[in-house]
Image (cartoon, rainbow, N blue to C red; front, side, top):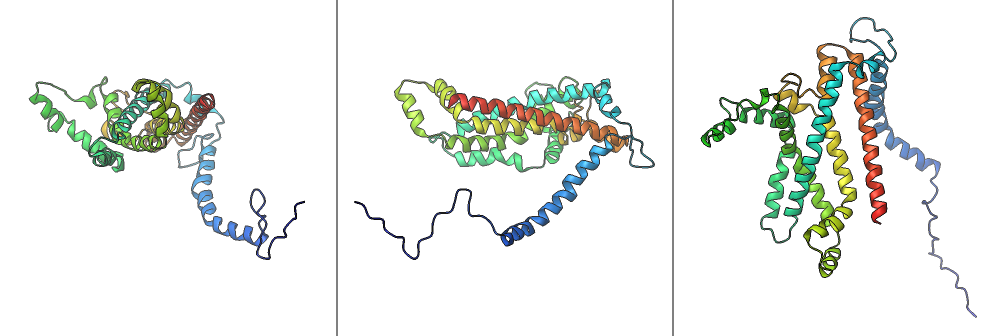
Length: 312
């Protein structure tokens, strides 16, 4: 027969699931701590977004009297040939930038994650440094490097017998050039994220795969990629959002030209809102971009989430 022992005087029963219930005083203190941040978010995020949403249904120019036009601005976004061309250009930029940056970052992460590579820390730092530089500053530097008269890159290529020409004024080369500048600027950040994800993969999985005779390619597709699904989802969404918001290097290097071949949605928003003072159309285009970004992000998270469930 077992005897039950009574808990001592210092015994405290475990807290219920979800934590102990908070008192009214604790809740009030928590609200007071949150209040400054909430006020800032309401004043500088929520209110401007609501104001911009209201403007998207008007013909506001920022001056004079504005009129309510309903859905006219949104209809124009999907019917104006110039804006449709801008949407297509943004899609092309996104398709060129996102997979290329991710593949380059993942390849370098795999290379620099090898334990036998000498100077890994130096190479990681060197490749990450472009990310901390402002994209506008980097764009200015690349503009001078690519200058057909005084640019160092053209000078070196001429020494090899290669005439690069003015790529920023070439309708066929301007878009690849601004995409390459964006990749050079951002792949270091994605590389660091991938390195962190690779370090979380248990080494025992690779050892077991080697025992079973799996080569490097099979280990990559059956161990590395599935284990990196969450990291890959984050990088893909982050890179895609960055591509959809492309503005800095395009504004500095091409201004949307030549012949609007690098005119992205954000460039169109800037020109409509700040040059043409068509604030209604600019805000409507901004909300269309926001909606597209949210939809694509949700689709990608759902896709990667389903793959993770299948792998588990």
